[in-house]
Amino acid sequence: MLKSVSKEDLIFGLILTYVFLIPSSPFLSVRVLVITAAISLLNFKTTIPNILKSWNALLMLAVLAAGLIYTSDQNQGLRVLETSASLVLVPISFSGISSRWNTRNLHRVAVAFLLGVVSASFICLVIALANYLTTANLEVFTFYNLTSTIDAHPTYFAYYLIFAITIVLFDAYNQISNINLWGKLFLILFLIIVLLLTGGLTSYISLVLIFAFYVLRLLLAESNTNQKMTVAFVIFGAFLVMSVYQRNFSSIMGQGDSWDRLNTWTYSLHANDDLIWGVGTGDYENILNRFYLQNGMPELAKASHNSHNQFLHILLSNGFIGVLAFLALLGRPLYLSMRNSDSLGVLVFFPFIIYGITEVFLGRYQGVVFYSLLNEIFCTYYQKTVSN
Image (cartoon, rainbow, N blue to C red; front, side):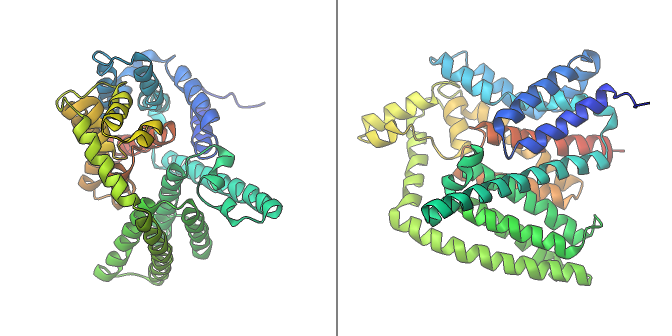
């Protein structure tokens, strides 16, 4: 007889499915997430206490919701809340497997995401190769041309690649799984090559900093042969990344992009007339566009150019109250990682500080669902596993 599937088995299977789909299909992943959350809510009495444990995510969503009270563009504000819904949908979904959360299941979730990133990368490269055979244009392998196949923004896909590289590198250095070391190093090299094609300068910096951690670890502690081989590979990867970064950086500096971004940060500050509460969850775009037009920058208004800084974006839309909520969202898992001496947690969340300086990573579903997932995984892990 077939073994009956429990509700927790079903929920966990759906969680693995939606995690796998995040890199390749935001459209499908969000729908699987909604279904998972709906099933988890059936056990209402146990769901609420478990959701409250993700208080930093709920606080961020509550601040965004409060910003609707004083925003004039209610439709835009509601769209922001819709984009940010993962902050509560992910905790609700994971509450359905609260009694089964352990290191083994954490590993399964990480593997599901890794497989999703690898699959999405292969899809992008295969379609790019097919386009190249038709057009003979190498640009099909880069930036938006590469990731448009899966309807993904290259910057956010780079975030996924950074996380995938981080967990495989952590596995390789600490010899956690039984997979051959050369297999892990080959996988890391493949992911680095795809990362370089996305052209994200911020992600390059994040990756080099992660690599630097392992070099310092090798210098400061005793290590075995496998660890030395891993770090040697890391150094090679760092030189590869920096060589590509240097060429891209020089090109971008020639176009003045870095100064444009610095100016955008300044514009975001000048446009904000309420540093305590901000302009409202839905008004940030209108306020910035009005500032651009008043100061002779119609091209930025036409493009609805955002602040390209998560901290300044939250300050503009929700003031210092929003910044405090964002710091709690970002700082809690990082603090828990350091408190529990978990180098993996630090390596995973530290890059988001860099992302936050150059991008509004919570401004798209791809960024919100990814961060919500990582926040839930690590915070739940520390509460359920480490504390025991």
